[in-house]
Structures are given as structure tokens and as C-alpha cells.
Length: 542
Image 1 (cartoon, helix red, strand yellow):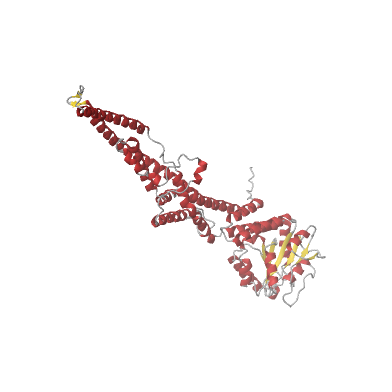
Image 2 (cartoon, rainbow, N blue to C red):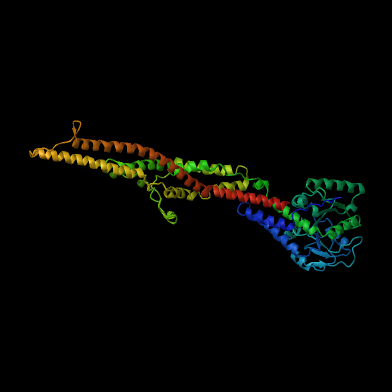
């Protein structure tokens, strides 16, 4: 028959490491007190584990007059604690040790100066390894006493709450201690003391009512014992329970495990928005890029690229008679201080100045603000509380540098302004050849007019049909130059549109990279941080 092994959960070491990781990830996001409390739990757990794990520290805690000290003496078998009607009787915690060898450092850490070794052996139970503390009253009129109780309640391994029939339902103990410690039910025992003051049927009724109150506090399953420190009734059962817990040597680890779970729960408090998964930034880049492109004047730059292409094409391929006029017009790209950085080295592009693109209008700035807000809201759509605020803040964390970064991206994007199509050179050469033909025809005609003016004999004049060759060369050269220039302009117009489309694509890609670096990546980082936080909380709670 195949034996089934019980699956064990994560070790305390791994849970403590997960709690510290979650606290580190929550730094600056969750309230500082919650984060520091989680770190304090981890530090306290590390200290407790380094001390004696063979001893179990059990504390008797209760209100004024509940009989803690009397119960302490009854369990110890000696009159170790003073008992009287003057309140408060117990001013500082004191300890009774059974087999206290090696417990000194543990008691030093607990800051318990009064230590007793009972001389009378515990009846009906083996308390070897038990350190029993008698705490001051949690409702003492003295603040120092209440603070001492609060301090030790956080440190001891096993909590024994001593209640009495008059005040077992007191809101002070239920609201301040029992209910907040509902996650520590495995290291808690509730004792109803002074049952000798009640008739048997009243004792049963009080125990049932106390069970109801504890169930309402979330302490279902916590042992409840009715005892009388004066008569000894029920003490045997309490001794047996304490002896069993001490023999198991598990109370210290169960207490630390409950502390880790409680600290993780406080970090993941739903009111802080810590326990929900984060959204994703996929699909958020396009609207952001659109808004940044408009604010950066990309449409204006793209139009300038098309016009600049045509401008340079006319200069390179225009009719030599008139194209020199074009040189007096400024290049549209140079007016914007764009297109001159394509040949710059990558290391030099960081120092290139701003463009002369007009500054974004109020409407365009508002569109960018809206896009940033939309990115933050969409990414934080599944989050609430401080984590949602952190994601929204991440979307705007570098908003102040965004305008300069986008302007620099436009200035450093290669627009291809220095690259000229090969056909420009060919057409330019052709234009000069045609211009040379026209000049030759003009000179020829000029020579003929000169000879006629000087009454010199005319040489034979070749013709094309009835038109003399000089006229053909002059008129044909002029007409051909104009036709070539017009055709070149049509080609330049089409080329300008193609180049404008390529530039628009390149500028959009450059601005998209800026949007990713300055907006989307910080948001992604915050979402990844939240995902790691959630995963660490899950491991700490396991």
C-alpha cells in the first residue's frame, strides 16, 4: 500500500524572506507605519528563533481583579506573586521557570528581571521548559503598566487570557486584544477564573456566553477553561493543556507564523488596494504617441519635409535660366532647424539644440495631459488605493522632461535631407546640356545678325524644313529646358510625398520610444513592482 505524505507548506524562513521582500517593495507606497511594523515582525522573529526554542513563554494576561497573580501562584505551587485588594498589585512582569537552563538570553530579550524557580514540582503535569509570566493589568490606571502588557503580548509564545465572571464581556479586552489577535488562535487559551463564585448552572451559562463572544471575535476553536485559583477547580485541565503545548515545542514557531500572516494581511489590506492584480499597458502607446506627435509639431515637420524636398529638387533640376531665383528662398527644414543632424555621431546627438518648431498650443498641451491621465487610469484600472495612485503617479513622474525629450527626438531623427536622388544629378546635367544647346543657337543667331549688320556675305544656313538650325537650337533648347523642369517638378512632388510618409513613420517611431521611456516604462515598472509585491504577500501568507 502506498503511503501518502502530508504536503508541508513553505518554511518559516521563506515566509520571513517573503515578508521582508513585500515590505521593501511597499516602501514609499503603503503607510510608513504598516511597512515598519512588517519589518519589526521579521526582525522580532529572527531574534526569537536565535534564542532558546526548547522553552515556551506563556503569559497570563487579564484585567484588574481577574485573579492572574492568584492563578500564577496556583500553577507555580508557591506564593511568588503578591496578592491583595490594593490595585494594581502587579507592577512589572515576573517569570516562573521550570528547567530554566539556557533561558537567560530569552528572558533578557523579554526584559523580565524578576525570575523565580518554583520549589514545588507541578502536580499532574510536566512543565519542563515552561516560562510562565504574570503580566500587569491591561486596564491598569497606570500607563506604564498598559504599555508593558502591549509590549509582552507581541513577544510571548503562548497567550493565556484570564477573565472573570464580572468582566469577561468587557469591550476593553475584546476590542483591544482578542479581536485584533484572531489570527493567533493557535497560540491562545482563554481561562474563566473565579468560577467558585458562581453556582454550577451559572458557570455553564457563562462559559457558553464566552464561547459565543469569542466566536464573534473570530476565535473559534480557542480552548476555554473554567478554573478557580482559590479552590483548585479546573487547574488540572489547565496544567495538562500547558504541559502539552510545552512538550510540543511548537508554540514559538506557531506564534511567529501567526505574526508573519498578520503583518502580511496588514500590508495587503484591501483598503490600501494591495491585494488586486494590476492592469497592462499594452495598447496604451498609440493614443499617447498621437498626442505627443501633435504637440511636437510632427504634421508641420512632415509638411516641411515635402516642401523641402521639392525646394531642393527645383534647385538641382530646374531650368538654369530661372532656378537661381529659387536659391533666394529659405529651405523649409532649415528654418525649423531640422534635418541637419542626420550625419551627427550618436554621441553628439545628445548635445544638439532644440528645434524651431512652434511651441505646443494650450489645446495640444491639454491633449498630452489627457493622454498621460488616460495611461495612468487604464494601467491602474484593476487597482485601488495607494497602489493605483502610485501607478498614476508613475505615468506623470517624468512629465516635466517629456517636452524636451520629444523635441530632441524630432531634432535627432534622420529625415534624409542630405540624401539626394541620383536622377537629380542626371537631370541637372541634362539641363546644362540643353542650356548649352540653347546658348549655342543664340550665339549662332547673334553671329548671323552681326554679319548682316556689317553687310558681310551670309554663309550657307542649314535648315530643318523651313526653320534655320540656329532658331531650332535656341527655341528647342529653351522649350526642352522648361519641359524638363516641369516634369522634374512633378517627379519631385511625388518623391516629396513618399519621403514625407517615411519621415512621418520615423518621427512617430522616435516619439513612441520617448513615450515608452518617459511614460510607459515607469508605469510598467510600477505594475511589475505591484506584481512582485502580490506574489511576495502570497508566499508570506502561505
